[in-house]
Image (cartoon, rainbow, N blue to C red; front, side):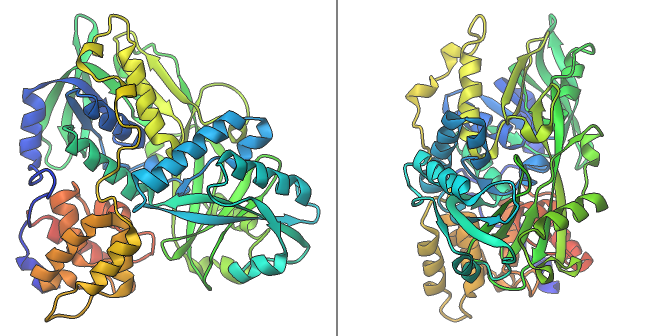
Length: 535
């Protein structure tokens, strides 16, 4: 698209001014002494940085890759209470998860989450009977104060009207419950913006090359900017290791003799084109403990997940042929063959769950948050669930406040004095935003397409109006990046200028949905990178 060649860096962040250059950010990070340096830009580190900045601390956040570039953008895309935890008697945990789920989807980020109805098919000879699952979904909905309706059981014929590809052979009944869904990468990115709006300084694509020590205590980190090779450092009173699957790697930088604290479980997913519309998701029991999901997501179908111990290099995690076969075989319990053709697969991805160290089957392990303090005073935190990302941030902050000697307590506002449900940037009713985008289109030019309006509303909330203004001021940016996707070029320019996008993957995989749709062609990638380079 030759007309894109003339598009310069555009505009400013309406809330916090223009995004500083990487050189300016590195200079800022190098000059100051921070109260807290968070290493790791997954949702756990992001949430902690957000809460720490809200509490009044001077906070820096760095990541070797992109924000949410690994596990945090490789989840099942669910905000959920955890139905399977009920059978282990974890009633309090489910209730807490529901509280967090409702807070995020109703009050913190209603523009980034949406309610989703789930069907649990009960087949003859399956691991659970209709009565047990019916009672389970009723109890599950009760623990959510029936905020998503009352869990109940429906007939196979009624379920098939909402899920036309549902396999009905030997299907006895279908249990129904409600949870929520999100685009995890967009949710993480908006939380980064919230942290920056609260005063945090952030930089992605900045890898730790070593830790800084003062009299045996960890007091910062040396880093290398992977975009241009620049080396710099950050000094901090306290360092938090939130590197997820790499948490023990950083702990060994602090103490070469540090014993392993975690184990890893791989979860793989497939994304497929849908053959027909789905109005509900399937959660099919595979055995006593495991469920396989089939989720309508981003106009596609998301299948998964696997759960197996992983002992390799976290950077090498990938979907194998065995993973693909397992996911398709398990999906075939409840989905007709025509929807499971390998020709429909557009993308696959794998992430690593961080679990407490110890023996046992990873599928039965609790998703606990592990917090440890190393010999040099570095705090390491790992694990937990996406659904409870705000709770994890508060938990880490309470741990910081209670450290021996209370090094940060006098400088931070206690968590119980901060608002419990601070919204993320762009909070708005997505239906109202989509309506406005359609009604308020440019007078002389063509109206925004309905699918683009809906996409912008549900991925940016009210910030979609900033993207619409870019498209109005620069008509070439109103064109679609790919004819088969709702994204427009204004989103690429916006990602460059306001969302820390540096590489084509940053844009295509995490700030838009082009990669998961199978539309990140070589031509698209080249044009996206070209626009990113025009800063």
